[in-house]
Length: 315
Image 1 (cartoon, rainbow, N blue to C red):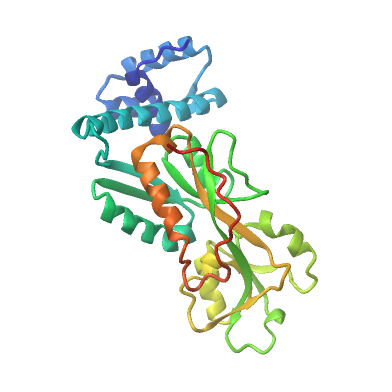
Image 2: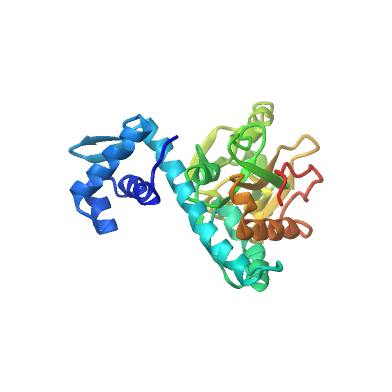
């Protein structure tokens, strides 16, 4: 059994966060030699080198990346244990008050249109919860990777065949949204316009459909995010194929046209760790997220489906 103290876990996490032993020492109020000794002790107990030391500081090895992720997750559970045990002691008959920080990550359109109403209801029911929301691009490991790495308690993620829920996480599908053709309002032949695109256009969901469409040209312009694409479409610079969430609040200068019965769709849901799924704050947010899909935003092209909730059993 690997026996590391919470203090040693904090040191390992601080070295990764600051990128150096000296930075970790400054953050934790320790000497650099004490940090170095603690890391060497941890490496000896774990049986692997966690950091490559060099002129550029301390860079996590592959083993170090894994160790840091576990360290963050363990430290978060210890923090939750303290707050939830105190809450249970204050209300031994049940109904313990939910309080403390709740770290949430979401991709841009979800953060803009899906989280706010859920957080509003959460605030009304649990004023002691302190949401901390970060917007993360849904590229590579995306929001699920932030949860796996211990940087977030819950992530709003795209879920499907192209990006299934990672095996170490649990989650559920909340909303299935359709893609639509977006073009300048009143344009007589929108399919003749240049194609505008962005990196997070979820090509894993649309690839097969896209390859079967001979009318779609290669992208002539790429933007940073879907908001920039929508703005450029509204200016008449081209057309785009976008998911429903990205079209919430679309201006009147933009027209939205359905792509037919074979239109591509994507599923949006939440992911968390099995341990955090049992915490009071995460459970409270999941309840509000589920409740919110009964009335989808008015501009969403599709509507929530009864595709089922692939959720771990939550207490």
